[in-house]
Structure formats: structure tokens, C-alpha cells
Image (cartoon, rainbow, N blue to C red; front, side, top):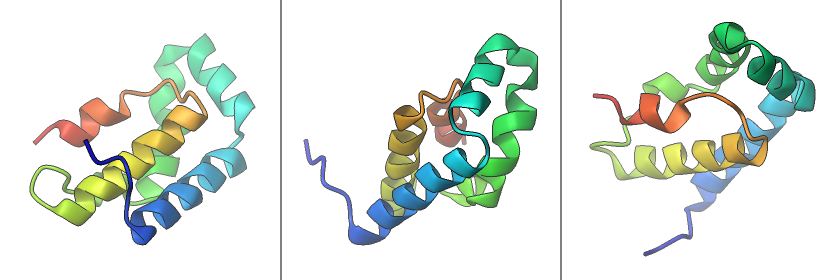
Length: 90
């Protein structure tokens, strides 16, 4: 298994970490955990701004690496959002 990502994907991941931090960081995570009904309204705009829903990890190698970097970044913050599931949906 190759765990290394391209420089572009790593940069995208760094931008995602900063975007989650700017959106509230720990507070965003706490709010989303406390009230699952508002997860979409908290995390959705950040993910949309990052272009998450434009990624095509199923057919594009660059999109796959970017999606992996985005999932790592969401995991860094323990973002309670079904990101990998949404990215994997056709």
C-alpha cells in the first residue's frame, strides 16, 4: 500500500486543515457532535468551499489523492461528518 501523496494533494490537505480551523476548529467539532442535525450546516459550507464535491476519486488519480488528503484533514480534526462515504458515492 502506498501512503505517500503528491505534493499537490498534500497542499490541498494543508489547506483543508486550515479551513476547518478557520471555521471553528474544536468548537465546530463539538457543535457537530452535540447536534448531528446541524452537521451539514457546519461542515457542508467548508467542504463545498474546498471543492470537495467536485472531486472524482472513483475515476481520477489526482482526485483520489486529493480526496485522501481531505479525509486525512477531516480525521485530524475528528470531524463528525460522513466525508469518505459522500466522496465514494457515485
